[in-house]
Amino acid sequence: MSAIFLDKDGTLIENVPNNVDPQLIEMKIGAIEGLQILSKAGYKLIVITNQSGVARDYFPESALAGVEARLNEILEKADLSLDGFYYCPHHPNGVISEYAIACECRKPKPGLILRAASEQNIDLANSWFIGDNLSDVEAGHSAGCKTILIDQGNQS
Image 1: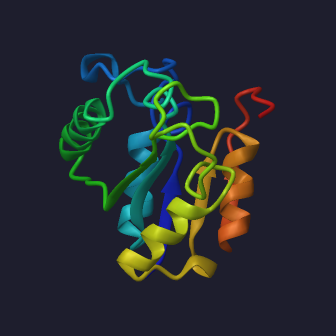
Image 2 (image 1 turned 180 degrees about the vertical axis):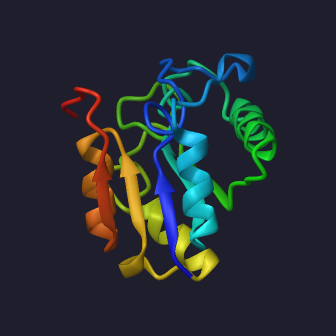
Image 3 (image 1 turned 60 degrees about the vertical axis):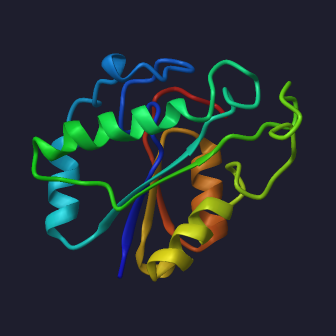
């Protein structure tokens, strides 16, 4: 099975830094249509996202459940669903000690992609990572995926 791994902020939804308010989540223009095409082509749709706001104490990890639920609610209206929602709550400079670590799941490392692939029997060589940062591209390449960089003017 092949997958499309998607960065969340700035790729799938509008980038509102550290937003966990489900009512502020808005899909990027064209995202629904693109996901419909990819889903019909047989790809699994999986979000892979860094959420360092947890480590930095901007919001609790539990708030991410509302974000995932809102994404699924929006996608359901288009007869779509996510096959996975994987996030990294860590950051080496975090203020919450249990999350203030250098981990293997924070992009640009491929840990979340590799975990998703293992859990969902995904063929990484026939999968894609779509993101708006070079860290997304690096994570995808490191995992063995093909990648697409959406140019939003981001340099990191």
